[in-house]
Amino acid sequence: MTLAPASSADHPPAATVAVIVVAAGSGTRLGRPEPKAFVPLLDRTLLEWALDGVFALPEPAQVVLVVPADQADTTRTLADRTAGAAAGYVTVVAGGATRQESVAAGLAVLGGDVETVLVHDAARCLTPPAQLARVLEETRDSGAGVIPGLPVSDTIKRRDASGEVRATVDRSELVAVQTPQGFPRAGLAAAYAQAAADGIEYTDDAALFAAAGGSVRVVDGDARAFKITTPWDLHRAEQLVGPVPAAPAAPRTGVGVDVHAFDPAEPLWLAGLHWPGEVGLSGHSDGDAVAHAICDALLSAAGLGDIGGLFGTADPALEGAHGDVFLRRTAELLRTRGFAIGNVAVQVLSNRPKVGPRRAEAEAVLSGALGAPVSVAATTTDGLGFPGEGRGLTAIATALVLPAGAPVPPK
Ligand code: CTP
Ligand code: MG
Image (cartoon, rainbow, N blue to C red; front, top):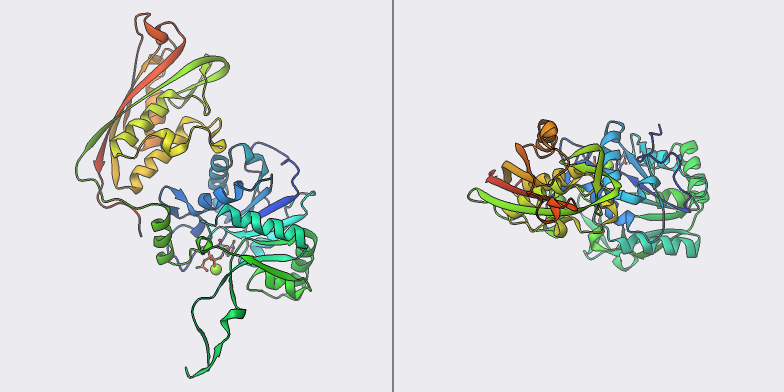
């Protein structure tokens, strides 16, 4: 079953490379209620971490996300958030009962121009972008199947059913295999058709490709491309991406200020709302100074820096992003660091728009995004300064955050 594209683009632009990200497994060994790819690692799902590497490829690629059918809507939302300008290249498709069926579902929706395919496990979510680029380059250069592998460092023994050691295996011949695995598209599609006809399940795509007569080469893997399988693996990933600090001991306050210039060419987005007929604000995202000031107040209260440090000021994934994206991600980050949000107060300094008539609506949207009460006020500045002259708008926010017990991860 093909689901609608993840973005508003009806036809993804042509790409000669595709990355099939398999994320349809349930993660039985991880033992969490949500499917493994949707389990959070700090403030984002494993799938989002995996997509960071995919979207860092140096050329446009069709990105096929193979997910559980009931996660399609969530996937569209997070793909749009992570992909930014590349969202038009994302296709979301429902997976199958086995990994092999999930890859087959991804292969079925490849664009007509795709010549090279990388198949990647979402569960290897910290795979460095250089590994994807290395596999892609070698696949193109060699025309063969290409797999990343690591030398085996443990001594390997062969034993019989009774536990008696029969031999020490020469480990210099062995590699531990990771993803992405790269293949010429036509060869992989033919190999998958043959596997389906034969009714054989293979342990990885390279084995399936080799069974159909394809040759496979190994390139260097990377320890960071390990697969998150058990709770221990998730804990290790948490250690790698950032330390989890001790829970805060007392309530803390924070302050945030944001200023944007008016830009008549932009629609106005403010306090999470669209304001039809009003002059918009300039900015890399949608310029929602209220949302940004609130994020800064929350981050300041939690001692987690500021919005520029957390999201970057030029992240292509956040081009045009609306305020609720920043608010939800900030609230989630605070939650994972052991904070609950007490309340937020924000004041707008500007002649326009008139906030009063839509105050309740704005408060509802902002409170919904944070899961905590937000109050919104506004004032003019008596004609003084740039807000009074109508050149721009200032938002000032304060936040109170509270200890919420132990930080959420590690589980
Ligand atoms: N996968 C998939 N479709 C399946 C099974 C697995 O897309 N029917 C994906 C997983 O989402 C994962 C990758 O294949 O990204 C590797 O599989 P694995 O680590 O075994 O994940 P799970 O099958 O989800 O975990 P478990 O075996 O513990 O249930
Ligand atoms: Mg599995």
